[in-house]
Structures are given as C-alpha cells and as structure tokens.
Image (cartoon, rainbow, N blue to C red; front, side, top):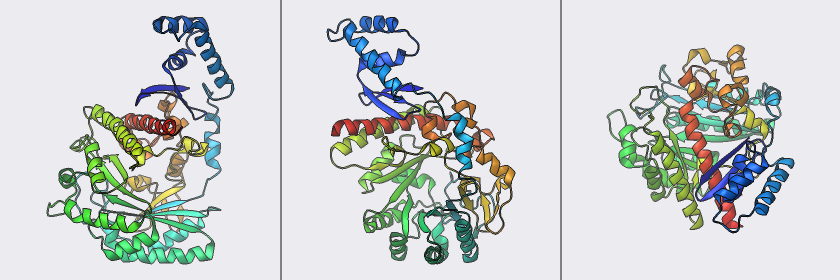
Length: 460
C-alpha cells in the first residue's frame, strides 16, 4: 500500500508497510499513482500526453522512471506487501502480564470547574477524594512487582488537580526513590496541573523530580477563560500564566508541555498556539476536545475543514520558524522517519489495560484515565491485581488489525488503531473507530511527515 499526497509544495509518497518516505517530482508522482492499476504502455501514453508541452519529458525518461520504481519495489521500498497481520496477536503476547506505566489519580477533586472536562470536574462520575500515601505506595509496589525485566517505569500524577494532594505526591516520589535503590528500577514521573496552586515549592520540586510536566493552558485569554473557570465563574488565565512562565524558565530546558484543548468555540486553534509562543512557550500541544455527543463544546462537521486547514497552517508556521532558527515543538507532529516506533508499537498501540493502567484514589485499576468511573471497565485493584480478565482481554485483543475499518487506511501503522477510549465513547466498543478522530489524525500525519521531509531537503 502507498499513500500519495501533495502538501507544502512537495509531492510525497509513503510506502506504508516499509515505512519508506519518498519526495518525488511531478512525473514520478503521476507514475506511482498509476503503477498498480495501469500497464506500462498506458502509463507512458498518459504521461507523454499530460506533459506534451515539456521537452524534458520523453518516452525514454518515463521508461527510466518506471524502471527506478520497479527497482524500489524489488528492494522493499515501494508497494511493500503487508506481512504483519498474522503477527499482531503474537507480538502482544510477548509482553503479556508486564505493566510499565501507571496513571495515579492522586486527586479526584479540582479547584477549577471546566465545563468541557471529561472527568466531571475531577470527580470521574463519583465522589470527590484524594489518594492516601498508603494507597499510592501500594500502587508503586504493584508496578514494580508487575514490571518484569523492565528498568524504566513511568508514573503520571493526574487528577482532578494533583497539587490539591501535593504532600502525598512528594511522599510517593521519596518512596519511589528508595525503592529504586532496592530494586534497580528507574522511575520517571510526570505531573499534570492547571497551575492555580503552583508556588516556589512546587517549582523546585517539579524541576528536580519530574521528567516532564504538563501545564494546562488553552491559549488566548478569552478562549481559556471561557471554559477554565473556578467555582465562582472567574477565569484562571491571569493567575496561572505568570506561574507557568516562572516554572518553565526555572526548568532549564527539561521537558514540559503546554497542553491546550480546542473546541467548537475555537476551531481556529492556531491563534491559541501563536499566543503561547508569544508568552515564551516552545513545547506545545493542542488536543481536540473529548466530550459527550451533543455537548456544546463538541467539534462539528462544519468545524472539520477549519481544523484541517489549521493543521496545515501550523506546519507552515513551524517550518518558517525552523528556517529562521526559532523552532518550537508540537506534540502531534513529533515523528521519527529514520527510526520511529518498532512494529510491536505500530500494531499494538498505547497498551491501555495491559501495559498501562490508571489507579483511583481507592486503589482500583482501570485501563486508562478516560475509563475511570465506568464500573464495567474496572480491572481489579492494586492489592489483588487484575481479576477482570474478560475486560482485560478486550484490550489485549485491541490492535490495528482487530478493526476492519482500518484495513485499507494508509495511516494504520502510524495510529496503531487509535484511542480505545475515544472508540468506546463514540461507538460503544473499544474496537470501534472514532471517524472524526481518524480525519484529524490523518491530516496531522500528513503535516508531520511533510514537515520532516522539508527540513531534511533544506539541510541536504
């Protein structure tokens, strides 16, 4: 399978199963598009007619180009057959029972009242609560005990708002550092915060102990304050931006992300990204809203062309800034064309419910943070482990080849079948397909690949 597209003044051909990326001229592009549906004589006739006004396109040139394409196919760089479908289940079996990451719901409560919050303002459709040190400690031990031979273990402090239980966060990090010395494991922590409670103590601790911090900012003040309000209805932009700036400056180049959400109210999210850049932030992410169907924030079909155009304009801006020596990072455009994820990850996806789980303040295990509060998806708890094997098998069986709709999609080995939570909430099945999300993902991949190709050609 190949995917041909034009973007940013480039003609790009992706060979899906080999991962090869080709930037070609117009003639080669037209030949490749017809290579598997036309015979050689038909291709020559079509190209000579289309380019009859060009003296540099001769029959000999066309035949040489066809020969080059045939050589690429013989070398496994074009029209590579898909040999992965039969391996999908076997690849996932190799890591069965190994957990590598936990999302600790350190606080099921929040000091903001964001109307689009998928977590019901941090309560996850249940009671407000904070995680005790004992529950968190047991969760870390559960991770160590179930991590097999893995050295690096990932833990996200999540909410609600984790800083509403900051003392326990600090205690758990100290406990994990002790367990590192005892077990030879290495913990990498991430903290996600809305910023309201950031102070010097938080900044010092986060920059010392957190491998990454995720900072919630929706961009423009009027956009941010439309949704991210406190319980009195006051916007939070002016309170948090100076704190974020101070934290990032003190971070000294360590990883962070400004994580925004765009909704029906701001499908022109590039304007929000520009505001973040003006504020001095360079590591950015803007995510499409996750909300119930019919919610006023939900992205609509009318928003889709606007959003797709925004992704293209974002890629143009990133390339412009790269060439000017002032680059920035956009999370969804991070792609490694030379290495990239191994075939296991490309087929199996994120590992929710198997390699990755969320832990509630009470110690219950769920496949990921977006399933927390949905009783059917409770996997077990950190004391007894996973006992809901039937539900876990649904996630274990999730891979890109488990979804018939993905069979002919060129992006399947980039998205790995997509998000199980989005699939479930839009179709009622973790093996379903969230079609709106597919449209956005395909456009992001086209933009990300174009951006990397343009950078490579510019450096060559």
